[in-house]
Amino acid sequence: MALADYAEPLPEALLADIQRAFDESYRLACETLGYTDAAPTLRFDLKSARMAGRALPRQNLIELNKVIFRNNPQWSFVYDTVAHEMAHIVASRCFRSRAHDARWKAVAEALGATPRASGHFDVANAEVRKTAKRKTYPFLCACQPFDFGPQRLSNFLKGSRYQCRSCKAEIKPDLRDEAAFSSIKSPLKRARLKARAA
Image (cartoon, rainbow, N blue to C red; front, side, top):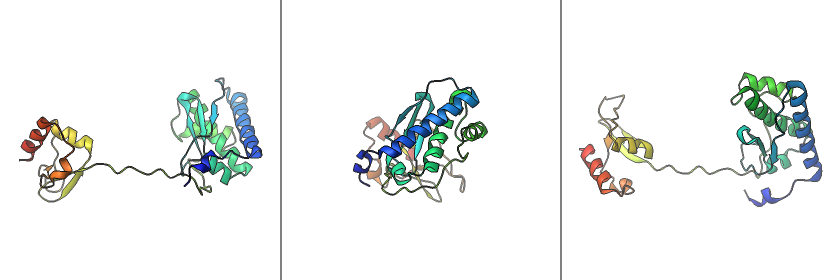
């Protein structure tokens, strides 16, 4: 995916439709639900292959994905997506709604949005976030190996004990793979690791 796809401006007609959907869904929130907060800020800086829009109620902000909107310029998609995000803002700020709960569904229906968690849309050229490879540390018990993440290793070094559910033996670091533990620079932590592995 080229980030240049996000730099390209949206066509004027599509921008006008997005603004019309935003204005209409906000008007409905005020008129039918008695919503009195200021209209959210609308930005076009969301970069994700999975989300056409995202609501950030605490910031009173709606972010939209330019590439996905460019790929899906149909009014039904535009209105449904914008009203969906407006429903998150209104439901959260007025009713302390979370995610796609029953309160959010009622608000979404009042604003004319389809009350579902996600839709189907063309995501061609939308950015896919690369998941960072998590650092793990080899541990083992009497019957199997384990990969501990940094938090569990830290807990272990502070004295937490872990027991295998299968063999009931204590899970300890596998120090045969010294390179895996090379990120532990503190001599005190290294000593504690060796002592607890014994």
